Image (cartoon, rainbow, N blue to C red; front, side, top):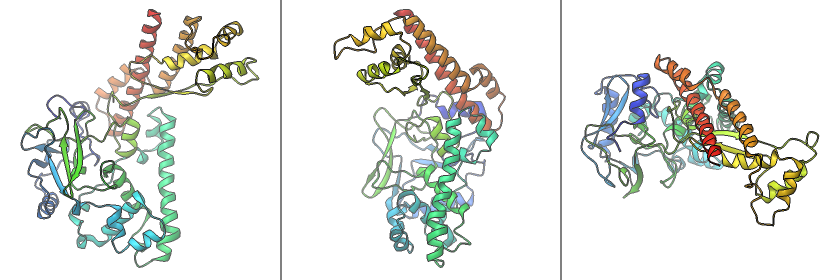
Amino acid sequence: ITGGRTDVDDARRRTGLHRSRRGIMTTTDPADGAAQEFLDWLQNHGADTSRLRWPVTDGNGRKAVATQDIGENDYALRVPEALMMSPSKALKSEIGEACDRHGLRGDVLLATFVVFELRKGSKSFWAPYLQMLPPPETCCDWSTDELERLHDPELQERAESRERWVRDLYDRYYTQTLIVRYPDLFPASFFTYERFRFAWFVVQSRAFGRKLRETALVPLADCLNHSHSVQCSYRLVDRCFELFPTRDGEYVQGLELLNSYGPCPNSKLLLDYGFSILDNPHDTVRLGLELRPPTDDALVDRRRALLRRGNCSPYPTFQLRRGEAPVDALAFLRVALAPADVLSTREALPEGDDVLGVLDDEEKVVAYLDGLLATVGDDCGPPRADDDAALAASPAPRVVFALRYRATRRAIVDSCRAALRNLSSSV
């Protein structure tokens, strides 16, 4: 899992920051009281944390370090299910009946449970864990100017709409329901929008779920930093959560013990965790095309019919991937740009033949697509070299993440243009 340079190492070198689910971690004494109380709580309730050391600080924030070599399928961390926070535990708590009656499920229920336990303060069973939770990082907190620096109106709209969505959840379940009907359980003075929002984003950024019976917050496991390249997974064994290296993976003694949040594109990393990775291999760039309307193209009905034969929409959306020529977009444009005589040739092909793959005036089609890609690349931001130079100047964190985001997208488009040129030269 570790051994070579990771994307986290790259991030440190370029920005002086260490990114995690928990946002930007300030450098503190590893033995600070709150952290030690948290670790004692874990160990006193059956967690095995002996194979890692946390928190370790090196001037770039908190991280976990392996205290021994850990091979394939052997666990690096073990946390009893009893320490996890989940919707099912919320339903068994004092607020369970009210929440169930009014349809709270999944993330909303878990977030409500977090707020409920926060209200208990030191009396909460999870107090040592909850007091370790800082405000989650998300690009939803960015200003309009900061979002515009991303050069992606679609992501900006997603960030703004997510904020509206969280507000709507609060109004629907709290303002109009729980606070009104159960003021003793859900006093308005504590169950504020700010606390619900905090808990909601905690769940979005820290919860595990795909391989568990349900979404759950897993103390300490959610403190590990992310690398998309680590070979690890998690499982539930004997009612304990285990994080372990998968095939060809290992944790090396003395090196950082990392987790992978999955194959996340930078848009998801920004929305859920507030950071981005330069040259993220999971990033794509959207390319939307469509036929001209009938008022501008008398042949549009014939084009639609041919596209249907080729199983292609008249309004297709393509995902541009690093280093790949957009051959599906080429196929669409062969029909979208074809003159009447070429359409007739394609229409005459026997049923079942590839009506989109026949080459005719390919140079014109390639040039048109290259022009489209050039426009898309310009929309992603300045030339990559400019953003690389800006990153080298170590700007503020949010500027760093915006620059990484748009530089990665620009590089994807540029690589697709290069692949397109290589493809056309070989035809």
